[in-house]
Image 1: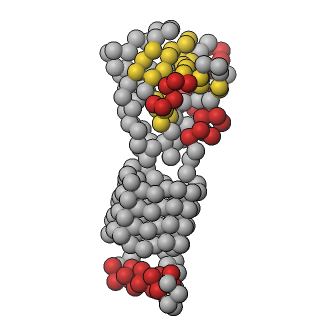
Image 2: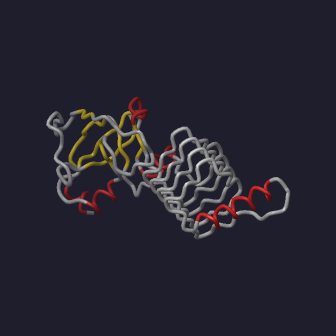
Image 3: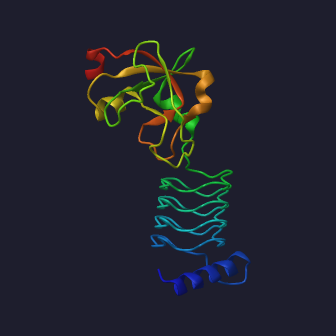
Length: 223
């Protein structure tokens, strides 16, 4: 979309918001990749399936906007108002949400619900699974043995799908992705503050600390 057409849409949307005529911004499927929308008022705008990858939306008002299935990959949303926005299915990979208002936004993955739905709860914490040496060589300070507790600084950004930290997943996910020994691990309740569930996860999460319990028996690993 060219800059002039976008300006007209934003101006008409501003009038619509203040009941001075105009029209609601209908940007469904719009290609706004790399667009500079810093500080723009897109409150209640229709941005379904819009391509906003790499767009500058810093300080923009996106309250109550419909961003379902929108591509926000690597978009700058720092300081943006996303209160009560619909983000269901939106791609937030790599997006900058620092200082953004996400109050009552819908469609964002709830970390607590994800953990409860995908991992076994025990009296000590969550049971998770991990392999070693698949894509990355384990750090030298990790002791890969029963009873060992391994640690790693974790990337806290939920918009980053794969970052630093100890990456773990449900057993079914591990079996579909990797071969070799699978370790059953424990994230103790007191370590949950270091658990990060990415918004775009396909099953994998990352954490600061896990305890290695045992290698999953071959029959169970193959079943």
